[in-house]
Image 1 (cartoon, rainbow, N blue to C red):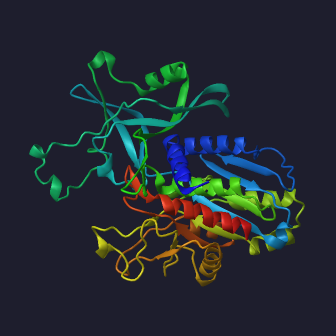
Image 2: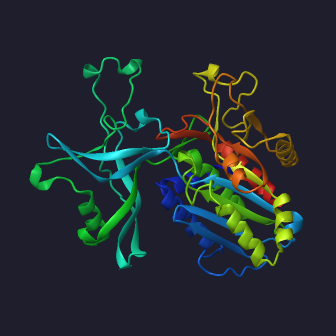
Image 3: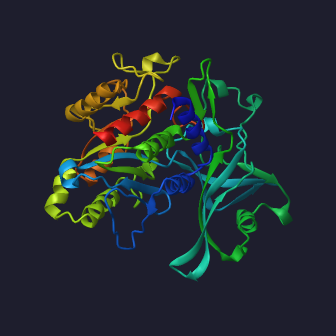
Length: 429
């Protein structure tokens, strides 16, 4: 797949994946089309060498893998891990509010979005809805991607907010609640009524929902040389997309290769579908067990395994060059970024960097290095969280972005292709 085609496919994937749930739904569709078999955690796994499988975790996490021809305890697992969620807003229970006949939706911030980028944009919603089923533990489940702009978060006009261009604090409970309608008491907006109509169910049968806001504006390739990717949720669906396609396109059959799409990284990963859970350890244990490995052989396999924790990285910003480290200045379209930190907020160390540097060197893939300025506290990702759950050597890597955590982020066509190539090379080594 060439770099322009891969970039366009990424944009299509993101446009069709407005939330973590739809990222998994679309990933499942792609995997099914490419011969992968879905497994259930509640059933026995009977796996075969040379075959391809996947399992979903609570609808918003997914793990796909191929069983290699080599004995796993001799070659280990090759793993690319990323996450399916992005910062934004969740819709609260009982969300309807009415202020002077304006219907407002009560929402809650999810993760760390740049709040100002959500103002004055047409918005919609997506997620899952639970409806009464045959029993308490078996409700009916619906996924909804509402195909219409219905909300907007209007900003306050400059005449009533003269200091707005000097920087104004944003109160998430007051300033970012979306406007949905103007109505009188008899016809106030009802989210449950809208859901019931859309799903063709009775209002009183709807039990609960997990719904988030999103912008329906399509992504695009831009720049004088078509070098940039502009779209929401690049962090971290770009990494997930690159990993997924690397696994699907992998023609080398000797290694057992795994792609992990965790959820809830943006809020700390403390869920059953997050990196701070035994999910990956359990899945790898089940693979080893199904392939008749002893406990001793499984531990040998883990000791010989390697993981790329694959999450977005920071590019230097041309308008804020002083924000970057003075000797490590990653730029868009100059290669995937190895992320390092003395406080181990990233798992990269000398050994794991050496492994990836050699793989990239042999494949002629450019690499860059990111470290924070010594006077700036940086972020973290799934790498160290996952490593606290399962002892596998690894590295933190990502494509450099601008506008990270904005409703619309900016990445590079070349970088996405090189990330795809790097993961592909890991799966072959």
